[in-house]
Image (cartoon, rainbow, N blue to C red; front, side):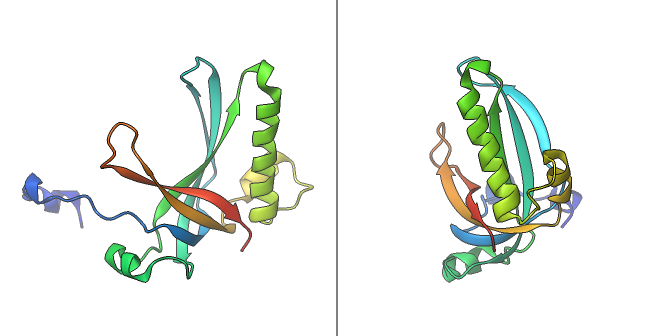
Length: 155
């Protein structure tokens, strides 16, 4: 459907579509990860490395009725992010994030541990992992629920 084809729809007829149901899915890294910087509530700055994941298929723990309501999950897009503090006093947190990123790249996506981080990020595109989809309510509006990829594992 094209947006221009929907311009005659009444806004009152537009409903929030269902979220992808919770459970495990096979995901593919679909593009090079993005890096951005932001300031946290504490005033510290963080760098966020974000992978775009595209759903390949649902695992057998996904509720079939909810999945039927949602439709085919193939092609659904989610993100998997890693946060890195820029505060030099929080070196342990930085190293914890580095270790989690290494586990994702090596253990879950299957990339060679001998690669540099830059090479591994470049080679992550097209790699697959199993990822748990979770729901998280918006802290400012509990009627809005976000989907996010939590834990990942090798397929």
